[in-house]
Amino acid sequence: MGSWNYKVFWDEVINQAKGDLGEHEFAMWFNIAYDSSTESSVIIAVPSNFYRDQLISQYQKYLESKLFEITGKRLGVEFIVQKPIGTEQEKADARQEDPDPSTKRQSRQKADERSARERGKHPQLRADYVFENFVIGDNNGFAANAALAIAKNPGTSYNPFLIYGGVGLGKTHLMQSIGNRVWVESPKMKVICITAEDFTNEFIQSIHDKTTQNFKNKYRNVDVLLIDDIHFLQNKLGSQEELFHTFNALYDANKQMVFTCDRPVSELKNLSDRLRSRFERGLNVDLQPPNFETRCAILKKKIESTRIAVPDDVVDIIAKNISTNVRDLEAALTKLAAYAQLVRKDITLEIAQSQLKDVFSQSKHGNVTIDNILRVVADYFKLSYNDLKGKKRTKNIAFPRQIAMYIARDITEYSTTELGFEFGGRDHTTVMHACQKIEERLKLDPNLESTIQSLVRSIKDYSSKS
Ligand code: ADP
Ligand code: MG
Image (cartoon, rainbow, N blue to C red; front, side, top):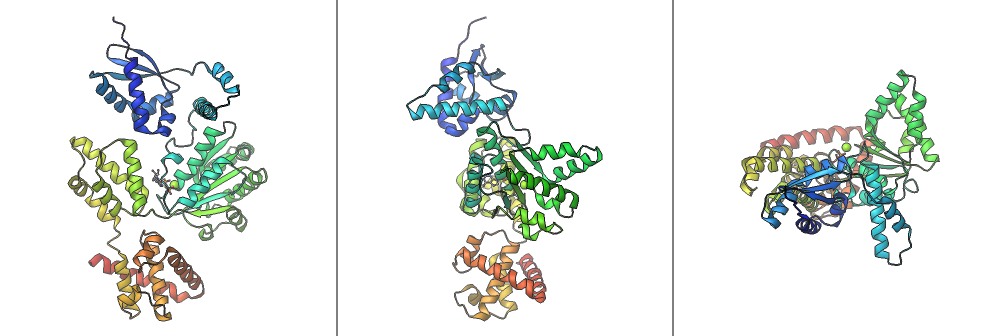
């Protein structure tokens, strides 16, 4: 047996990884140390099983190929789990006053990493639903910044925080990011994350088991309570009642609550008024579908983390063709990556087009375009297409235009910004205003609803033929 030592090579790998991955990702996952070498592998100590599994799935291949580049030898990377050592000394170091703020920051960062390490992963939170993986665009900027502020000082402002919006737009991701951030930065805080459905089931079970007191204690003794998809509570009066009391207890104790919902709270049905008013009490923000640039940025972020080579023109056609939601964007990319891996080819525009043909045509909603909406609405009101799209503001044009905007908002996935652009280069606030106007009129005028419904049918009909 020779005594192998690949430490210098490993150090170089780590050096390069720091540059490749960026500071944050590196700090998050490379909490590891060289341990020893065998003839054919380098053995690396990691602080927990969780880290080991993540490193194997996310980074092992990458590290091995780096090692190969540097040594010219095919060496394996193996991980062993070792409890962190020297923490007493590190704690002593951290206690010492250090005049240099950068060192202080480093030691604080170390302390954070250590607490994350000691605490492990939060059992109910996904490790990848963190702020660092959340791309901010004008569709979600306000929500994301509010979420960051809340994670920094839970319970002090914006309580409760409620995120609403359509499926696949990042509600769960953003909510869990708050949980993950608090979990890492405030080791003393208790965080619970649960879906409204599980909350309901657990509550019912506790009645059955006669353990409601335990249930109450559990949910009334947290620092941060995250409840996903509260639209599930519609019609569930018992669970609403229970949540109402939980809410009051947490609210009075300044404990942070975060909820997500697939629509504005005002549109929930069969929800008690008092719970509704609690949900609406703090800050309610919506997530909109991302615009083209944000869709590209999200794809690029995702590509970065998976380390698959995807050319820009491919990113471009995916982002152009899938505007519905982020989950579909990711699914397209995953499909493409899986195919490329299977046939061992690089992803090209041709491959993307042929592999994603079906995905693209599905997400087009039977070809409903703004143009089609304008044509059908113009026809119905006996106006010209150009008038409807143009700048004239006379009443007989303004109202049909508002209807067209309202319908477009309802049945396409365009953001208000994109719609403003499509409707003759208007501002997104014009679109929002139009939708509000129509919503108000809908409340007063029962005929308008059926007019709109029949327009929508015609538009879909027209679109499926075009
Ligand atoms: P929702 O809860 O609104 O249905 P999710 O939070 O489950 O949506 O998001 C769907 C997927 O899209 C997740 O994989 C999430 O990570 C991703 N995603 C959504 N928004 C963003 C964003 N702004 N940046 C990066 N990924 C995002
Ligand atoms: Mg969700």
